[in-house]
Structure formats: C-alpha cells, structure tokens
View 1 (cartoon, one colour):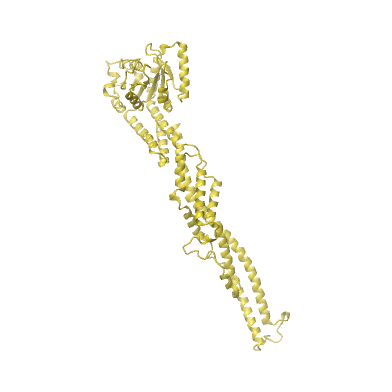
View 2 (tube, rainbow, N blue to C red):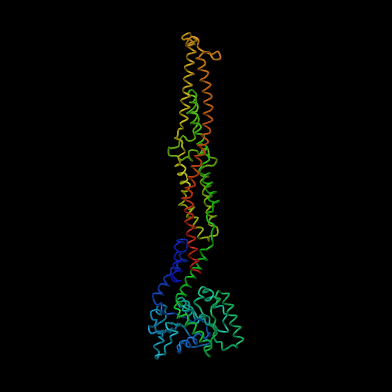
Length: 532
C-alpha cells in the first residue's frame, strides 16, 4: 500500500468514525480531496505538474523561459505580464487532458518535443511546467487563477526575489497555509546576480530562517539568476530528481490529505480521553443501586421473610396474629416492579431518584470524555444521556423486577416446625379437655391406677404444661432461626439485585459509552496516520 493510499484510507476511517459529529462544511473538503486525488491519478501518473509561483518582478517568467529553453513567456519587471497560466509539457504524448483538467487554455499549452524538433531532454521527460500569474497582481482575476491552479500542482517552485523574499503577501497567503506541502515544494531566490556573494549568503540564511518558522524547514533553497544562468543547473537537477522519482504527484496529494487531516484535527480535536475508569463505573452502579431502591427492597424482603416465617412456624392458636402485619411485598407479581412496591418506604420520591440517576449518568459520561472537543463531547453525551436513552432507569426497573427474590421458596424447616407446633397444640387441647372433664367428674384424671404424677401433677395437666412449654421454646427458636434466614434472604436479594443492575449498567451504559469512545479513538488514530 502506498503512502497516499494509507493516508486516504486512514482519513476515510476517521471521517466514518466521526459520522454526524462533523459539520458538513468541515467534512466536505475531505470528500473533495478524495475525489481530487482519484481524478489526478486517473488522468496521468506519468506527468509531474510543476508550478512557478512568484510575485511581480520576481523573474519567474524569465526562469520559465530558461527552463523551457524557449522564449514563451513575456517578461516584465514593473507590472504583471502573465494573466493566464502558460504550460510547457515535455514528452511525445503531451499532457492535454491533464492541462484541460487543470484549466489551462489550449492556446497556452506548448508541447516541448514538437517545437522545431527540439533536442530530447530526458531529465524533464514527463514534466508539465506552469508559469502562473503574479500572486500579488492588482487584477483580482489573476489572484483567482493562481489560487485555482495551485490546487493542481504536484510541485511548487516558489520564486522569490532579493527585494521581496520576506513579503507577507506570499508568506501569509500561500507558504504558511501550505506548510503541510513542504515535501512538494522548492524555494528559489532568483535574481542572485543583483547581490554580492556576501549579501546573497545573508539573504539565503535569512530566508531559510523565515521558512523554518513557517514550517518549511528542510525545503531546498536555491539561489538562481535567469540572466547569468547561475543556480539553474541545480534547479534543473532538483526538478529532474523529483520527476524521475515519480513521487511528486503522490507527494502533493499526500500533502493535501495531511492538510485536510490537520484541519479536521483542529476542529474535532485529537486529545486522549480517560474513558470510564473502574472507580467512576462503580460509583455509577452504586448510584443506580440507590435510585432503584435496592436497599429498601432488600429490607422489605427481609421483613417479608421474617413475617412469613412467623406465620408459618408460630403456634397455630396465635399464628393468625402475624397475618395482620403489613407485608411490603404483597403486591409483587401484579404488574408492579419491586422498586414501585416499596416506593412508599423510600426516602426520596421516584421522580427525584430518576433525576439523580440521570445526573450521575451525565457526570460519569463527562468524566469519561474529559479532553474531547466540544462537538465530540456533545455527540457522546447525547448518545449516552440523550432523550432516546431516557429508558435507562426503566431498564434498571425491569432488571430489578426480573430478579427472583426467592419469595416463593418455603424452607423445609418451616414445615417441620409447623408440624411440631400442631402436636404441641393437640397435646394442650387434649390435656386441657381431659382436665376440664375430670373437674366435672366425667373422666378420671388418672388414666390407670398408680399412674405417675410428676411434680404432683396429673398426666393431663402435665400434657398441657409440657405442650405450652415446648410451644414457647419452639416459637422462640423458630423466631430466631426465622430472623437469621430473613437476613440472609435480604442479603441474597440485595446481591442479586445489585448484580442485575451491574449487568444492565454494563449493557446499556458502559457498552454504549465504550462504543462512542472507540469511535473517537478511531478518529484520532485515523487522523494521526493521515497527518504523519
């Protein structure tokens, strides 16, 4: 894969990851760059378009004539003489289609090989040399022509002169904005014959410092003279080297992609973000647990299980009293969530709990996206906390309502204790009836002669006493066991509810936030590849 393909694919990946985060006015230039690169490579990969760009009086037209070996461009020093781009193409095939695409009129296109059977110049084979209008022309149309044709050049030769090489017009309008195109640039300090050797060195050193500040460090600076021919061999050799490498057109297109990527990075940002760390995630789950009423539900489960244990294991004659106590979960299973069933016992109303959960979700999202640019952050927050995600609390309620709290489970020991309680009641009832009957002389208190009388009590009375004592002991033990079991049931319910909320948070919050951050990271990675 070529450097251009790699950068184009990376830039496409970044734009696709951004989606609707980017304003169309910002994303549009990137799409135009893709189309431009495709058209340029389809038209001609064998030609290298070299544009001479300079100000009035810089001598670029004279330089154009010396490079082409023909007096094609009109030369002037006091006013602009070039109003339309002039092209000279080397090679038998010419570059008509390419020049038509650039916008050079047919009358201004010269095929170098056809002029008087000029000798072949292998070093310039495939060169398309453009002489552009002066960039500082007083004629606005000339400015427009330069700006237009500059979009199509594979290699810029910036022609400066000793008097105006630091002119802000070319540095601010062209060089500084095209710092990303330094690999597709050469800088020529023309009219070197007007300076002494010492002054020329000072001017070149000063120009190199200016270029360094503008991001053009390392770009070759060649001192030339169209009059004496000084520096022209070096300039021809450098242009020839760019042509022979066949990389000039790709270097220019790579620079275009880099420039667009830098612009996108400035608008969309590429700062790293912390993501949703474990403490923030755990704090969010804790807030959801509180807002879903998990502690109140667990308490209600404990209270309900304790009540059911009392009803199931109390002495039958008094067990009905437990049924009169309020069961906080009595309405579960009738279309209401567990949180709604205990809403009356919660310290904060459900609407306030919902707002609290929404705020916690927003704060967690903002913490995870710290450092994102405003467009990206707004997009992520909207995706995670926006109107379409208001169902987060409803999802949590459904998760809570779907948890099996174990309320239908009836421990076996309840049945055993209940059987024993019925036996004690039978003993008390039978013994009591026997005692009453013996008072009226209906039966003998002693079932047989010599029957034992523990503690001086008859057997019927002993049955009543022992039955009551055993029932009291059994009730106390079962109450204690019921409390222990109820607390364990409450703890199990709280754990199950917390796990359900944890899973729901992972599914509808963390996964969505992770997806959005992954999009942002693909954006950053794509731009980093496109810019490098």
